[in-house]
Image (cartoon, rainbow, N blue to C red; front, top):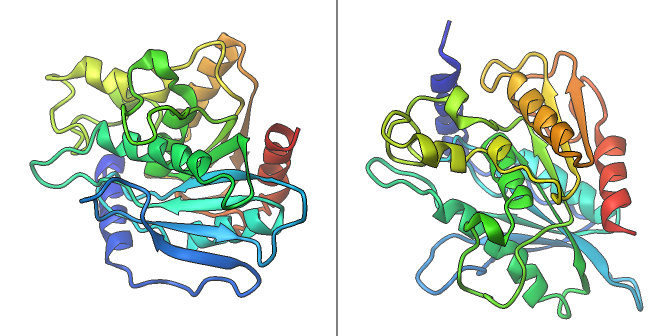
Amino acid sequence: MINPFFAFFLTSAAVAAQPKPVAFPKDIKVEANITYLPEGRKEKADLYLPLEFPKDKKLPAVVIIHGGGFVGGIKDAAREINIGGNLVRNGYVAMSIEYLLAKAGKPSWPQNLHDCKTAVRWLRANADKYHIDAAHIGVIGGSAGGHLAAMVALTGPDAGLDPKEPYGSLSCQVQCGVDLYGPNDLTLWMKDSKMIGRSIKEALEEYRKASPVFQVTKDDPPMLMMHGTADTTVDPEQSKLLDAALAKAGVEHQLEIIEGAPHTFHLEPKQKDLRPIVIGFLEKHLKK
């Protein structure tokens, strides 16, 4: 049996090697490959927009963070396109981002998280241009992206993980987060993270700092977690650990265990249509 840790990275390599999987939906508008990071950074983002903005109304926005084991993945994979399309059809602006990936000898932590938080700030900085309600922004991600989505949601300024710039005057905080089958306690899930670049023995406190379960506080925004029972890459126990930490802190949260679902799925897997759950959660917390 393949070790789940190595399976995670084998999956990542396969994802990274895939060609662009599908075209963008025709019933929405996509501004592809926009620049949202400082000059010199190659990572881009895709902005998902309605064909026409509603008059005299601002839309909540959601940052989409791709998976790939912290070392691979693409912003326009089938999962991210599925999520982006569904969000726009339900009255949101969505932004699917690239972020710094770890390479051999070049860890990406905490810059990868800084990039995700900068995306939130970018949406606020460009709120007027794209008819965005800057007071209502959420985040969603799958696998490694689920981990980063949880970290964006659960780390406020006091955690010391907000980037100083760009858009340093704007808040990185989101109003809710959706974590799809992400690892939430890195001290239990892996022994050596390329993202951190040191072994857990060498950097236990850094692994804890990079784990959502150790970042939960009572003032965190609502969280939705989803995990499949057939996931052999990230054990469903990882979502249960975050569920327990949120419950202990008294944070509003929801855990959905999807019977028979594997590691990677979008909002319309064959096991269950998840759109009512995810969209319902976002409606509750981003359209107040």
